[in-house]
Image 1 (cartoon, helix red, strand yellow):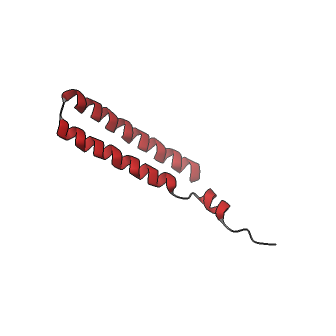
Image 2 (cartoon, one colour):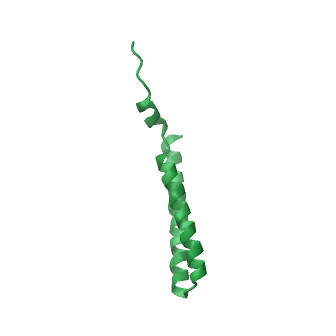
Image 3 (cartoon, one colour):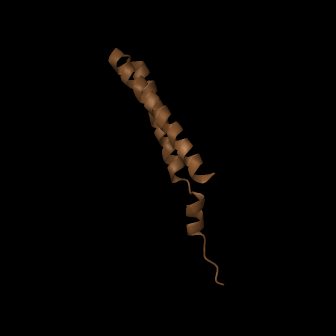
Length: 71
């Protein structure tokens, strides 16, 4: 499940972020300040979520950090 899951998650985030940026650019062109603030907050929230996801320990990291047993 590992890499494929991360890749799919990453692609979904990229698609959502791209859509939000497109929306933000459109709103900026139309000078709708209230909508700009809402879209900016949505983008900031997505970035916080992505950062949290990136900071989560992966199974590989967990294995690397696990104490090695003496044989």
